[in-house]
Length: 129
Ligand SMILES: [Zn+2]
Image (cartoon, rainbow, N blue to C red; front, top):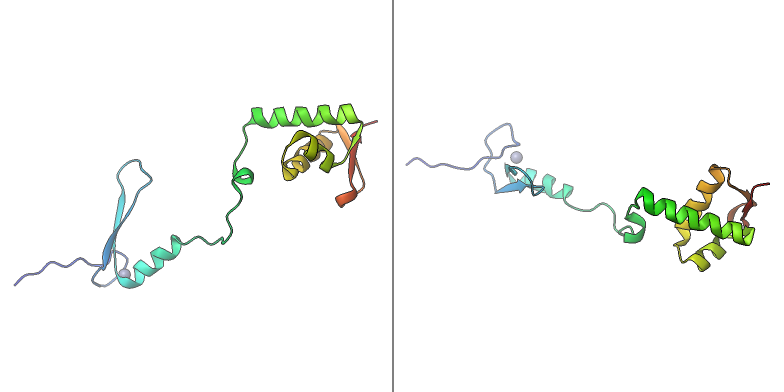
């Protein structure tokens, strides 16, 4: 009796496969692999997240250039109005996330629109000149 068996695509010798895996990104033809127990285990490692805590969505979500420029403008206007500000003030009054405020203030400093005084928690930002 002739019998056909599925063999592992990743083994150099004929090892019976325990299953067929399909990889698809939703477009085009999906790739398939017949895998033995050992190679199945290796593959499943790739599908296990390495990070235990997910990055908060708000932080992970990229903003468009337009959104960024709008936030940058409002941060700059806030500094113009208040002359000297702390990141916490900007965060509280504009409602922008604190980490975002720090990014925006850094960009304004790099663009030489404002200057930073002090470091760490006590740092303040004021208009240049
Ligand atoms: Zn194998």
